[in-house]
Image (cartoon, rainbow, N blue to C red; front, side, top):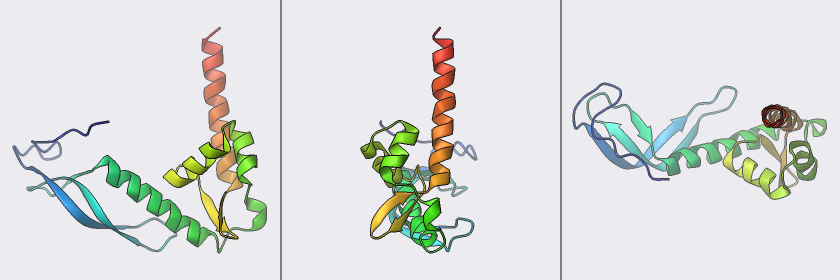
Length: 144
């Protein structure tokens, strides 16, 4: 997918004020976790109001690094009973094992590190499985 090149700021309305900025650093604050500094980001920002948009690549990087950061901290607080195996998660969400690993890598499925492996959190797996059941249920009803 190609990114839109902004010329006029969509936030403040200033004409020809959007500029591409590269190699930026952002401090991400997430509740219940220490702040995380992420380097090497880029995006388009307004010279007037300083508001802007991260590039898709930078958004993915932020999500991935934030998920890993949260997983490392959750690994110290989550008990073993709250952890599911990757196969169990795949079965519950009706996707492949590779799909579970991809979701964890992209930050779309909460996980922890245990014994050097990424393992999904059972509560998040159940929520995602329930959501996919609702989506599958609504499409099958509308198809008949």
